[in-house]
Length: 536
Ligand code: GLN
Image (cartoon, rainbow, N blue to C red; front, side, top):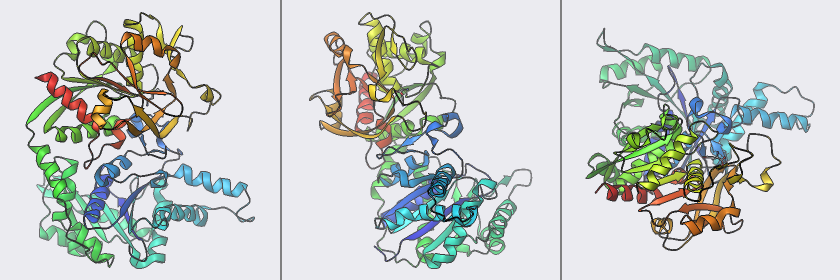
């Protein structure tokens, strides 16, 4: 542990979607592989308090941490790369910054002063940036600033960075991620947008130390020299970031470009150890040379935007590697599945996953998909709403409770097999009223789930309002759907299974959030394995 924490800021220019999250996670991985303890945080310039109330079409998946924070999906990348849990402190939005400043103002903490963007909002941002650093757990904190430099809403963040660069001098560094577009008509890579973007940062008082240049073609030395000259950085600080076939290639590409070395030099940190990335490399080796292949259907209503199910698709990559198997995910729109076409749409699948979700859109397609998986003995994993659909399907088609439903959709259902916990009924505010974060769960010995985890005591992350209605539990169990996982304190049903099926599991929690490269999630590993066996 060094005396003081080092802060690395990652900004973006020219365009959004350059992959700041992956670059940040890759750099963190390289520094971690050298023996440093590193964490990454994301500052999001939007006014929502958190992404919990955002439609996935807006911002992709909402990622949930152990401490129950609803966060940006980049935190998922951070955990998947580093295998270290994140928390609420790792994601801050403008909404949260303002909320906190306004609450302080109401409490009179500003002693009659006029409350302003500078210094009050910027001080709050600086304080948030340093929470993780001051915890004493980390040598290095990487702070990714969402949005693109020049956006009105990111100005206070860039200003906070400028102030920290001034105050902490040798302990701070700025990496600016830009785009070097290729103009095919000219047959050339163009550096002007990068020059402009750096100028924009300079106008705000921030000189970047390192430029990470996204490009489709190699950057030759001349081009690097040109960029270096125009942007006041050293040539070795012009880092090429080529498009990669997998996000998991990026740490190795960044290592080839010596990004980690340049960072350590600039921060005056010694190179603690030669980075050990053996496990990472063997993961990639298997990822690229799989022995087997399976087709798994992901039935959901946000399939047009694949970021909506980011953690699930990544968990399949990890679980695929654990099975030496390529998982071909077939994205199936739940709204398009009907009783009439389900056989046709879901044939040729080796496994079926019914995705989490909210609201009624697409739910009947999800329920039909469960029926198909159950009746045709296709391995099935239902997550959250997917588990609830499995319960509803079983109630309707096996127990004969024709109008069984969840009270989320049919408030006056005669058979509310999924309903709201009593203590939640009084809460009407949409934000932050869910059962969120990690809860304990105890598994029945010899269940699919206990066999997958190799243990009976687990902790998994939740994000939902509705629950299995325990008044129906006996009926379900007598007919063959068993509650194999329960919360030891509340008795809430967390997992249902059908033991007479080859592999049928519904989880009220979200296993996908905990899957990492180093630790593929056991439930996904077991599901892929069952799908592989089903194929044979
Ligand atoms: N809408 C369901 C609930 O609130 C399921 C939520 C989810 O799938 N994340 O209980």
